[in-house]
Image 1 (cartoon, rainbow, N blue to C red):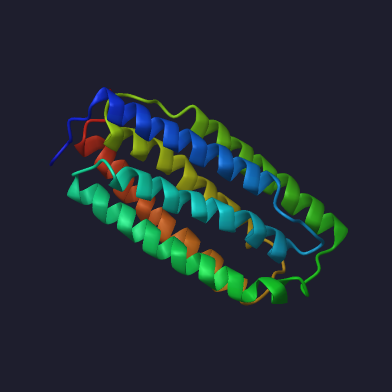
Image 2 (spheres, rainbow, N blue to C red):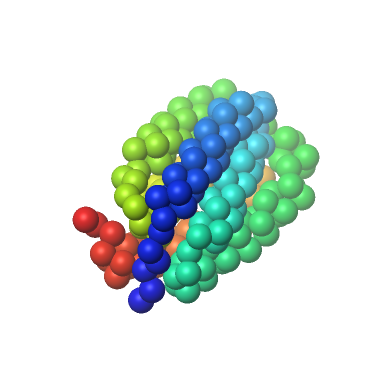
Length: 191
């Protein structure tokens, strides 16, 4: 398994870009337009979440020679680009599915707790001189956050068109989590 040798400059540039992507994601998710529709609120926060994953993968692809990571990154870019397009298609319609005040409060509270945990884990992801390992440690909590946010969404009465999108997020990102955890061990990233 190829585990690149990275220059100090490469690592610094990679991490600088990652921090910018993370900060922009946090800002865009926290600043996302919200209303009385759980469906709309999920979409408006998940789109910048997906956009950040795409940017994280594009950042990695500038540096890695690892074929497994290239494949994982390209799959994430493809899946999340498709998911963004699907969410944008139903976004306007989703506002018609108003949620009760109690459901909206419960959903929002859980969603914000999930996001805060994800933000914290991504900010504290261990950084070393191996970009491949850094990416895996950064992307794992990102994927875990998307799964938890989607599972939280599916507890509520939502726009029917959003149900298969949320289920696909869970399925694809759980598969990605397994792949990345296996690769963490193969690359000996636990040091």
